[in-house]
Image (cartoon, rainbow, N blue to C red):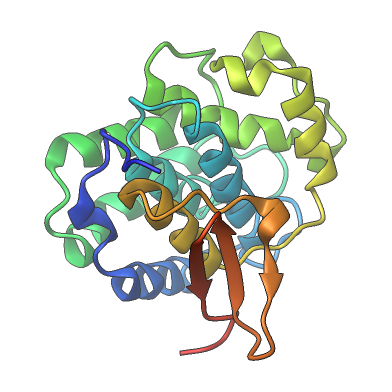
Length: 223
């Protein structure tokens, strides 16, 4: 598999820094344990983003991942909270330069714009923005709302099979380690980690692969 042409290899060089950042965001999230808008929702949105990126070669994959981490992180209620996206953007503006100082200002701006606008905006022609928002909107199933193609941006998200896929994945939990490894493998051309190949070896490590490529990820909670 070829590396994504729109990927910056430097984004994927240090997973440890991303994991520390993710832990910091979680520690500052008022609703981290919420079933509707907490950590399990963020990680499912991140995984959904990885699925959509397969058909969105011009989208910024690292911004899509960061969007999933930040956009709902500052919700203060599971109900109406119109400013939560702006608060998530403010947290990103604070933490991203500290943890990821090499991320270009234009990409941080794209991230914060996606966070601020994700609730009220309609579909977007921007590949990164559209992928971010679709990765969230496909998961409206969790609040008993069927995603409508009218509000989706990408052709893949509008596909009825993808909408059904999102429904089937509402109870699946992913760790940030699994997620980062999936994005990293796709970005660097290390082999597309097809979910059908996801399994565990005797040591408890997740193994993904395609053909002869195997991608090994430590399990949740390991160092």
